[in-house]
Amino acid sequence: MFDKKLAAVALSGAIAAAAIAPATGSATATKAGTYKVKDTKLVVFEQPTKSYEGVLVKGETFVVKKLSKSGKYAYGKANGHVNKMGWVTAASLERA
Image (cartoon, rainbow, N blue to C red; front, side, top):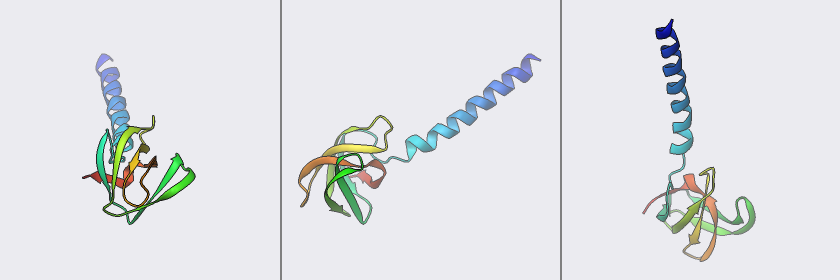
């Protein structure tokens, strides 16, 4: 009986770990630093998904200062013609 309970706990732990991995792995920007825009266009917002600031294009840089609690959005300095602080989707960035 103990072996069955142990196997069930181990299996549920493996399932939980597999569910968490895609969520954390989907955001390319995972910490502060300089990143390049990997999408064709990346919209910069004053707040996450609110108050449009401008658009970065592929290859322009974004300096991440912090990430949202969910890790979905990155806050920092948009370089290039935007040249402002703002929020972008973290998954649209790659290490420079």
